[in-house]
Image (cartoon, one colour):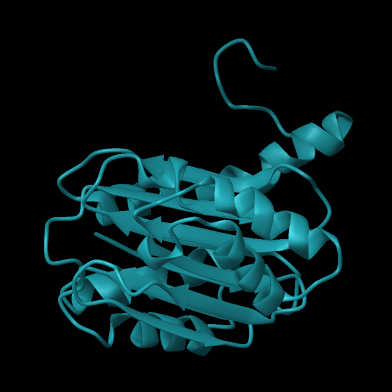
Length: 225
């Protein structure tokens, strides 16, 4: 039903996640990020409340493994959950409950964690994680898009993917640097890539408008001189 990647850029401290599913609006339920804190993925039979617990654990100074343990311990139905975490130091951890759907898998290493269920190929999480690690020369959004595209090329989910979400935070702001979603589409990956082609070149401008508006560039629309 869902496969995803959580990642950290070791050179900038940026944190982010990308997730896709046959269900609609997956970006509203599964990826959670907080600047200088970490990334949480909650999926399979999703309980978004667990993300608050995981991020709160990280904010107290604990690492990714502790955040996963705390979320699992707090859930009355942990056997249905699939979770991943990358903390602000790049530590990572994953959990897959025994009642996770279909073919499911997980991968984690320094700066990345990837998970999936109802997969067409058990190796998809590992391949996505390794792809992410190989592309350190790219920006974090680009690495995440490339990583999940690797999952798509390997067959992705057994059913047709319909939604996708990309969420990235920078360490110097509390708001999202990138928050792009395709809530329902027959081609969510390519729709997201087109959104990124439009938004990516403007992302820094929107950040400047928030923190240094006197330096902000024109919007380039009628009436904005």
